[in-house]
Amino acid sequence: MHTPHTPLLRYGWDEHAERGYAPHAAAGFRPARILRVDRGGRCLAATGDGTVRADTGPVSGTDPTAQPCTGDWAVLADGPTGPLVHALLPRRTAFLRSTSSKRSDGQVLAANVDVAIIAVSLAAELDLGRLERFAALAWASGAQPLLALTKADLVPDVTHLYADAAAAVPGVDVLTLSAVAGTGTAELAQRLRGRTGVLLGVSGAGKSTLVNALLGEEASAVRATRDRDGKGRHTTTHRELFPLPGGGVLIDTPGLRGVGLWDADAGVEQAFTDVEALAARCRFPDCGHRSEPGCAVLAALADGSLPHRRWESYGKLQRESARLAARTDARLRAEHRKEFKRRQQEGRHAMERKRGRLR
Ligand code: ZN
Image (tube, rainbow, N blue to C red; front, side):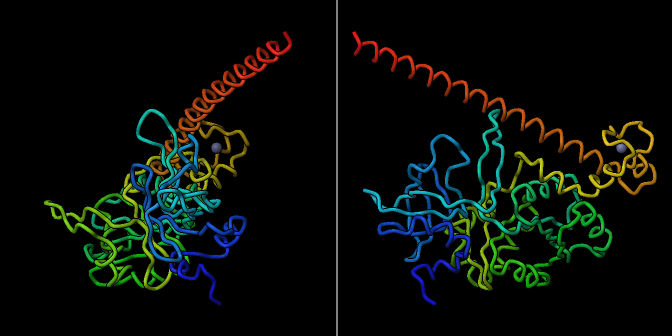
């Protein structure tokens, strides 16, 4: 069946997008997927008729999380100066990051992601705390995390590293990859078929190699406009969302390379299902896991089945998440106060006008 949106299939157009777009289907509008957002209110978007530059438009108001981001499905309209983002379709999932500034306004880094690939290099020392943080962020986004252990060719025996890493991310699919040997890439490509994946991981985790392996021959054609900088690094990327040759879509945004936590409460719970299950077995439902009798957490720490490192990591991420939540609440309260004052003032003006008319 050929619909006007068929060319968008390779950008991940699916039933969800179809349903989301239906209320907007009218003359003058067309669906598009956002490939990259630039400064100055511009973005790059894929439409049924190819790639266009568009104004990000009057979508949002002041809420930073309502701004278009890579992976969003958008409704494009023809503005006076060219295509314009008229509306965003509801997001299935969203990666939010707290900004590094004191304001904890979230920033959406990627939308409508199904699989969050956490790339971790086996050649570097395994940082399990960071891995847990990435997993919490992934779960919180609504996407399914997938752990990609890269550079397997650089370590003689991956068995222990694999076991340690897998234990830190219960419920997560773990793949071992070697771009050099060409192993693991096909499995990863298969898991991305018909879905949208995003790449997480610090620099040196082998993400670029992974992207190139997944994109195959298309890599050099679509990816880099300027190839390398003086330090031999790939610098400018043409876009941040790539259709994969085997089907599916990959998002690689620089913003996701260092991540903080943003409202990851649910994510922390899911990243630590083993700890949560232990805590549920404590004798007292309000157990503080300090000295209470019948504490399952303390027992597991004592017999080594719960590593101290993991228990501390859990507490740390929970506290961090709570701090962020409190900061957000403060910001929301301040906004409500402002809104209340504005309404009060409006009310006063209205009263004065009324009195004026009555006089
Ligand atoms: Zn306890």
